[in-house]
View 1 (cartoon, rainbow, N blue to C red):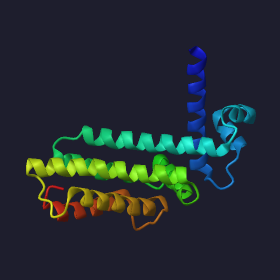
View 2 (cartoon, rainbow, N blue to C red; view 1 turned 60 degrees about the horizontal axis):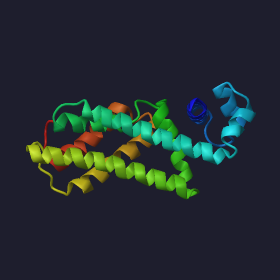
View 3 (spheres, rainbow, N blue to C red; view 1 turned 120 degrees about the vertical axis):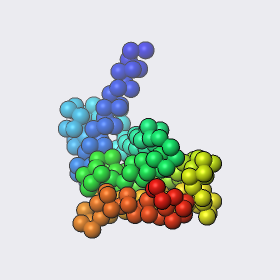
Length: 200
């Protein structure tokens, strides 16, 4: 049992190290020795647990998605009424700045979707789960009387996620015209339009 736990901890450490290597260097030219250096182990140790680099990169993508979604749910769960929860969702779905490690890693890994069915499926799942979060918040707001939706909640939710993704890419790409506050305000401006809620 202890051996299994140790192996799990070592795999997790390698996943975290690979994530840092990808965030810092990008996927292009990523090498086993880069990950080993981040983890403070030999290249052979990395290969022992992950003989195929693609398998490790996929686990990094999975881990990043789960961490990101966990943080989004925590942000909305800690907020108050449906209006505050939707405001929290909008803030949590955008990079804090161009060096936001989680968002930078996700945008880098999402680029694999056009070449890998696994990565494409994971990216589609992330989109669906983010939309489901917004759908729930919108439905709660409609039920409480805070929101008056002029479209189905699921449609509005997908639009909100798409807006986040678009603005997020500009933030990560260091577009000086877009920062976290401006992007959040733009997402909330759309939310006000479709919910009729001036408190957003």
